[in-house]
Length: 360
Image 1: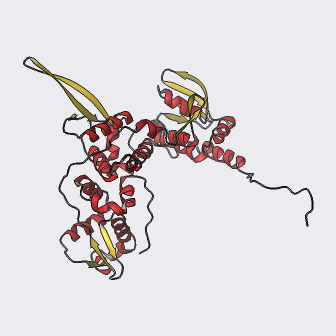
Image 2: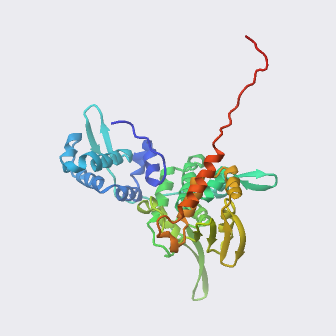
C-alpha cells in the first residue's frame, strides 16, 4: 500500500503522525479508548476480531469478513485508518497485516513542567509594533476560525512544543484525552495530580477549558483549603468523537440582501471581529449594526483575509433565525465578496528586470 500522509487536524491525526511512538502511546488506557472510539464502524469490527486472532491475517482474509458492496469504499477506509493509527501493521513481503496490541491498564500520566501559555498565544499570532502588540496575518485568520478550530490550533501548538520543554508528548496527549472524558461541571480535586499536571491545569484554565476553585472546609476547630478544577463545556471538544464536528452554539449574525449586518451580541470581541471586514455604524447594548462595503472588504484583503474566510465566519455564526435557511448568508452577498476578491487579484505582480540597452 502507498505511504499515507496525514495532516494533524485533531488528536487522532496527531497520533497518526507520531508513528515512531505508537508503542508508547498505546500504554495509555485513555489513548486506547479514544483511538477505538474514533474508528469507523468497520474498523472497530476488524480491531475486535483481531483481538482473538494470534497469527497474522492475509490482506485477502479481511475481504472475506465484509460483504462485496463495502469492499471498494468502507473496507479501504477502515484499513487505511487502522494503518494510520498503528493499530494494524503491514508486512509487505508476506502481504499480511497484524493487529497491534492495545493494553487496557490505566497508568499514571504526567504533563508539562512549565507554563508556556503566554508564549503559545504569541507564536505566530502577534508581533511587536512598537510598544503595543499587533495581530499578524495568521492571527487575523485565527480570529475568524470556528471555536473548535481555534481550540485545536492552540492544543496542537501546545503539544508540539512539549518536546522542547522536555515533556513527553505522548503523556501530554493522554492527559488531555483524560480531561475530555470528565464530566462537565463536576469538581475534581487537584491533590491527586502530579506537580506537572497541576501546571498543565493552570495553562488549561487560561484557555477556558477548566475553572479553578478553592473551597474552605471547617472541621471542628481546624480549617482546610481544598483546591478543585471543574471542566467546562469547551473541554468536551477534547473528546475525539466530538472534535471533528462543530460544537453546537448559537450564532449572532444576520446578513441581509442589502449587505446590512445585524449582530445580536454584547461582546466587544464580536464587534472588533466584524470591524475587520465591515463598517460598523453603531452599537447598542445588545446589538451591533453595520454594513459590508467594497472599502471594508478591500481593507480586509489588505490584511491578508480571504473571501472564503469572511463567508465561512458569517455562515458559522449565523443567528438561529437564519441558520436553518439555505443558504444562511444571501447568495448575492457571498457572490459579491468573491467578485471583489477576483477583481483585486486579476493582476498579479511579480518581480522583474528592465534592460534599457541592447547587450546582444
